[in-house]
Image 1 (cartoon, rainbow, N blue to C red):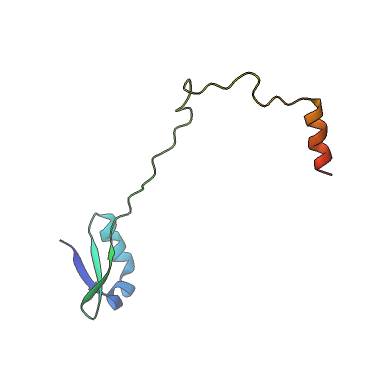
Image 2: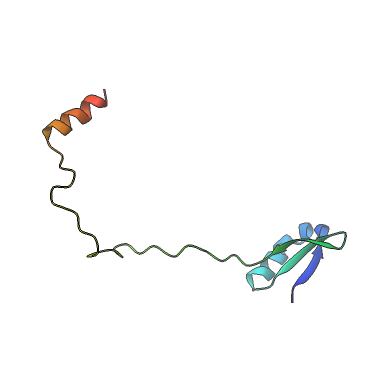
Length: 80
């Protein structure tokens, strides 16, 4: 069950309410007795990246994007 607090109490006791949310509680914030917002624990939606997770699953051709002397000269000419 969630605790309901009014806006004034939420502003006054935000740190305490956040501690309750960190402990897993839901807090409903109400204005004039009408619920307007809910504080809930944050749940990350992205998974942790693992370097090397695709190792051995991707092949790059030996001739993919060769960089030769002409490319090197063009690179530095473009920078001028």
